[in-house]
Image (cartoon, rainbow, N blue to C red; front, side, top):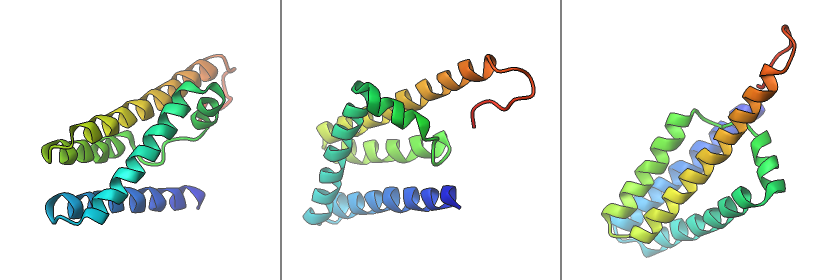
Length: 128
């Protein structure tokens, strides 16, 4: 049940960001684009802190992906393309940086999982 809530929350937040970006970029609603920009810069700072602060990184590595990697990357790349196509190159680069940070954190998490599960005796479960 907890996983289902996280998935619904992920789709709600990311869907809202895509809709707000569309409203701001294509329909000219400045408030919508401002909300996207605020959220994007807050997330960029948080991702930066997560990657470079060992204690935050360790906490982030404990939480598994909410949705499959392909879906997460597709949504992030859609946002990058939307921003870049509208001429917001710095914003697109910051969003791409977030994507890279997320992939780095989960890649490190998966590497730690592989090392941990390879050292466990047969019959015991590996990482979940």
